[in-house]
Length: 325
Image (cartoon, rainbow, N blue to C red; front, side):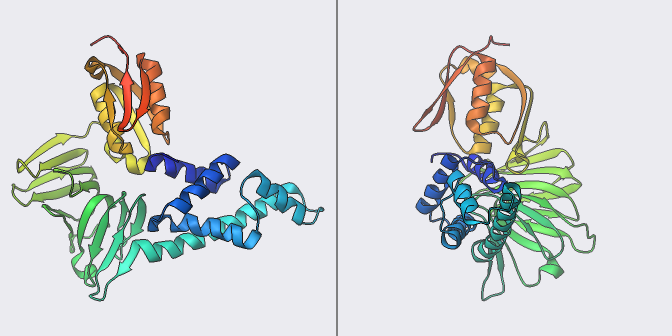
């Protein structure tokens, strides 16, 4: 099954709600067998539990076999509700075990590391603060965290910091230092990317690059530091599409297509190219919540008189598109 991390997360949500088809469940089962990543252990445990303890296949046939093995005086609704409740708790137990194994590690030196691989995950810190880590992110803190509230970080995370004037919360990345008292913000600092981006949702944040001056970023503003140029650019936040990885909401209001495609590529991690660069000057308005990349591209193609195709590098948009504004 070839799909982005976002599309896969949506399919898992459908599965846990009991909304997937037999074909979709079969595809998920096959995917798990081919995937050795640790962050898929919860789903692997779930499938294993069903297969070992029930001895039945998943999907529509599963429910039919289950009905045949239970006493006929029970109603179908009651049976399925009981089954889904059992499976929900089984998934929760498996998830807790997997988090302990794959996403939460304590070393011999007393350092605690929180990390993600292919999907995002929320963690609560000892001081009551919370952080939602995007895929391929890592956060580490020491035994003295409650005294110093200092962490080392790489990747992307949305932080909601508990207010404490006596203990500022500090985040160190490879090339920047961020300090707050109590606020919420998004920090992106992947080693493979040239820029470090800070978006402040509430409160104020001190942002200090290793080779540039400190800046104070307030609510609904952002700072982008270039490691190459060693310069920081401040601007107003026009939308929250940069944190769509967490909210799963993309919102465009008369946005130029170059901005739309930039946000889509960042959100899905899939390259999108155009045949006619004039298309990039077209404008689009619309909102997408929990939509797959192909669903969004289909809407864009219909609205702007385009066609889209998938190729080895990602997606390709062709056609004249709208008239230049």
